Length: 167
Image (cartoon, rainbow, N blue to C red):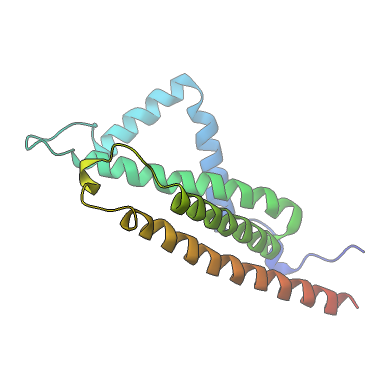
């Protein structure tokens, strides 16, 4: 049975447009001529990756890390959401993508908690024992498990709403 598209599922929302713009930016960055322009704009925005006079990294290093983390999250999770959006619709795509993402994060937190890095440790974590190294990944795992359960519950409710509307 073909269901009608509701008004809230027509067209692209702001997140979908942002995903498209980022996708085009990624594809354009593969062309060497455009990559030089993007590099020049980026260095003008955050500065070069240099060490300051006091031996600390320049502020551009922090900005580079923030930009890379946010853009990678938007590109990777956003592209999966966009693919699901084209096949499932806005609401179901959000629920499926959220369920998959938080399930993956729970597994990553579990694996990192079990197999935390061994060997030489950086100076910044020198005083931490084996248990203290696992506190943050454990918190990530439990938080992701809670959000995973919430998304699975929302998927179940969505499925029961669709079944009730179809019968």
